[in-house]
Image 1 (tube, helix red, strand yellow):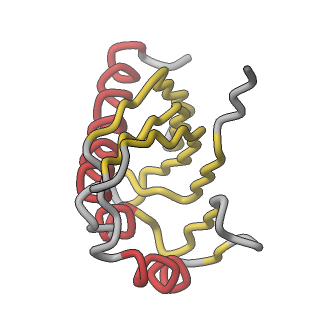
Image 2 (cartoon, rainbow, N blue to C red):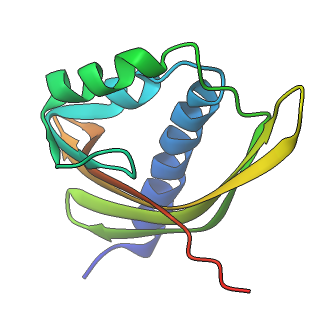
Length: 136
């Protein structure tokens, strides 16, 4: 049986890691996520045709995005961390608030991050981003 106090500490730590990476991402710095990712990370998002395998492929995917992402602010909604030993699954909804010279837009996402404790540090071993289905 898990220790709920320890689980709460892990939950807070995982969410803090994710928020720090999201803060960097919104300023055009995708490397916070690669620094959090394990060498064997796997990754899906709406722009990937196939699964991205490994940290080198993830870096290749992120390189053209460097300096181009500008998110005014974001809202992380409904974060949930499920802890099972040295594995923690973080799921949440994200709303990116993006302002350009022309318009203000919001992008809505579903996110899953699977973290694993490796050498005492929490690392992402799998990421999946999808658009939120909003029906009128």
